[in-house]
Amino acid sequence: MIIEITILLGMSLGVSLAAPPGPITAMIVDRSMTSVMKGFMIGMGAMSADFTLMIITIGFRSVVDLGAYDRYIFLVGGIFFILLSVGVVRSRYSGNTISEKRNMNYFSGLFLGLVNPMQIAWWITAGLSVFQRFGIEPFYFLFLGIVLWVAFLTYAINRSVVRYGKKLAEGIKLFSFVILVSFGMVFIYYGLNLILK
Image (cartoon, rainbow, N blue to C red):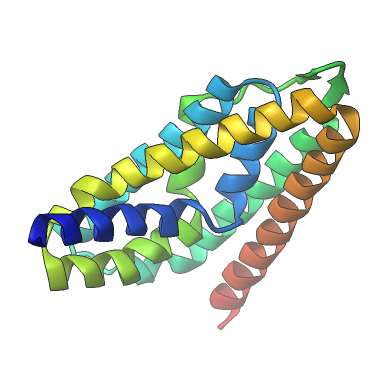
């Protein structure tokens, strides 16, 4: 019974980390219009960032004050998301494909995850709390939850665009742009606010 609870907790945590609308989801959705694999690799890059953040948070929880770097994390993340939003607008829909000038891949997802204040905040709050209460075991299944969610999301978006075409593709582009630019502006605001304090 304990192993079932651990699996359920871990997978639920993975979905809670990966599913909420945010910059990572916006980029996965945007890339999934081109192909399932492109969207999936963005998600796997972001998941690798989660693994890195988990190691940092758990390994150095009593040594490194991650909060001391908030202002820089917010600024870098905000600027990066604004740049991504410009790339989304510049992509063009043609038939069932998206023509693009940028090459988004696993490493883009990795960097995106490492500068995403939402992911960092999740690990130093929810992630650390779960570790202190339940230990490391739930995190084995957290990553399984992320993989399953990303696989479902990328396939669903790609099939929907193929079936419904240009209107849906343009709607997804608009959604991705709004999410990215909104979070970018909010993160820049928070970063500047912390610097000016």
